[in-house]
Length: 532
Image (cartoon, rainbow, N blue to C red; front, side, top):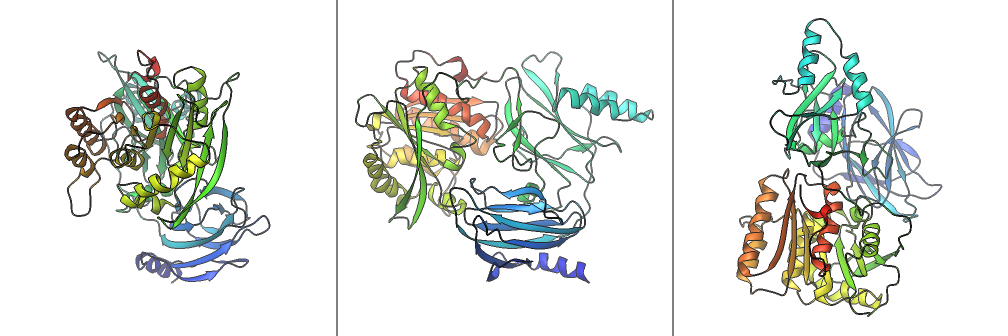
């Protein structure tokens, strides 16, 4: 009877939770209900959950807090929500029958934060489908032969443990390509890969009845990407369910975005030997470091408030000629996964750009990001009438010709829109995998590109980067915008790398874009900025 109730609760769930109650002590959290509370050093509300192995749990937090999953003994299992990052939805799959708990924890920069927590869904375990595909990897073909003769996979996994994963093999007659095989050991029903070179959440295939799961891809020898693996994903039509079990590859020692230290939130990193170097992302000894100040900015126009990180390079002097300014969206990523202050320190020290300050703008929430960054006249007014005048009061300003507005994905789209609507403030657009497929309601894709085609040419320069693994939605629309801009007479540098929709690539492309737009005295691009 209890199992039937749990299934019904999952199937009958409405989109929004109701029945909000105040958090007090440790209580059972019911599906479809929500709780509100406040966190502090001595106030960490905790809620119990009774789960079965394989149950998919989905929920959402509103508020800048961490949310941690605990086992029955109260020991941490994983960090579900990293309050310093943007996503606020959480998903996980119970590893075994028993009691679990969710605990709200404060952020050092947000003591006493109020929050709401909604448990949206608990779906039971279901069977998975399996498939067989031909083996492209010589190593896997050899293993398959050994298994058919009664052998085991023990030596194979010992080799992977020593050499790391994924498995990279040469291709006869194709020196500019590599065969890369991603692997997982011992899943029960299925494995999916998040961040595959295809641009899709690809399934891995089981090798006979062994504990080896695999998927092979032919990729350029200069490939760079980050990825996660998702074992035993519950069957669902919602692609986001993959995120319930995603974690880094345990046999790949190379990680990315692992500042939280949690293996479910961090990613694994693949950089083939021919990938373009990224020489500006690591702090160096002997390089003068700028300062970073976090301030809170309220907007009358938008009716919200946000963090803005102010970076001032060493020796910055307000009003001094020949200095630059970077205005960058998505602070949750560009202060962590992409170490923007360090990148600027190194570029300035190498003489590749002038002394350049930065405004790194946070989103009030993941929902506000979706509403503000796609072309939004009210957000453009906020940028022009509130943010930039406020920045001048902080001593951060530069002429439009030395001001770069930059971002990735929706942030790239927003950057191009800011250039079109306010070229008197933003004379340079740095777009990383910009979402130029975006459309107004009931309109066809490519709205901003059509606006550029219709509008008079403005005093703007562009750096457009996209990844070969991003598919036509990003790749083709970026190429279309490039063609329109060139036809209008704009100065455009457009580059493509064997990479995906990925901060691992964007942390290398951001400095290259700044060199292109602000490093006017550079006669040729540094080797790190030449796609391989």
